Length: 384
Image (cartoon, rainbow, N blue to C red; front, side):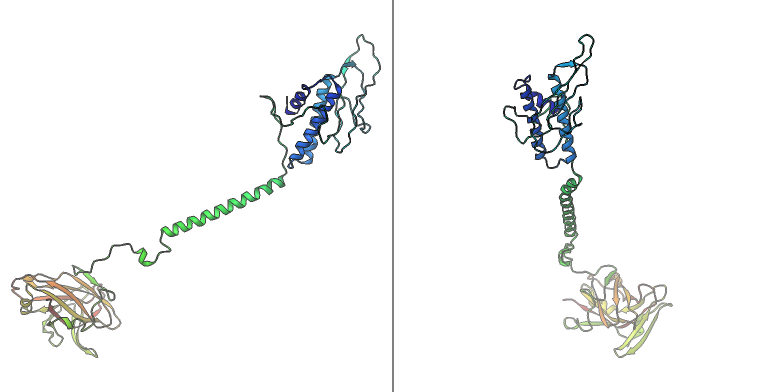
């Protein structure tokens, strides 16, 4: 039993269902309830509304047939009041018409009398009203067209929806989804930008612990610029008493291997010794007299090499020391540019007798490309 039939039968049970006038009021009330339900649902199309009205009319015809007596099996003629000719047919409900016509429906049965012996008998189907009044008629029980059906009974099919209305309702959801997606993408981008430090300054990005002051160790490297840049000539003279180790005026204390060169030269900056290491990377050795080392024993000394690169050929030099019994200075590296600068390194000497002279070996090109260096002076001072 579907929802329409259940609603009508429940209404009939509330009164005298054998009374034709009562049934008629129930049927009209059913049409009125359907009309209110359709008006309350603006999404129902005209086609669906007509289909609903025809369905309820067919159901009323089926129910009403149960209350009519059987008559001889002739072709009955059923006339619907105020219906156009040819609209009502036996066994079928007339088409639903829109409009406020409220005729008084009646059933007219004209049939010739048949012999009672073996004459077939049939039921005369009723004519149901084709109108939907605006309100429930007096005396008819209220019909709820949307009452739940009995368990297991087929349910009412939801009305078809206008696709244009569907699209119209979905547009805001699409816009909301697009907006939320865009905001999420922007938020994720900002989050990663903050995590990667895009908006931080260089000082904020530098989270490393403060660097300790550089100390001279084996294979130390002094760049051409910055905190460890070589001192300008004369910059250290104010706080040191210098002892001369080498001067270009006395090149006899310099030793150059066979594939290296050492030549005394002079320009506007004064005399200098141009040294050039060979392809083997051999260094030029500068003597450090034993008398100088005796003064340095047990002291903290600072050596100063005053030099510059050959014109247009910046280079890197390496420095090694051999002080005999007093040890060495480790390997040093310096970037030497076009300007005349001082390249310093310090040594803590043990308190012992040196026993002999020592040497300071300078490689003019650490990269072995044959670049030359102009050495103006080598000196040493004792730190207080």
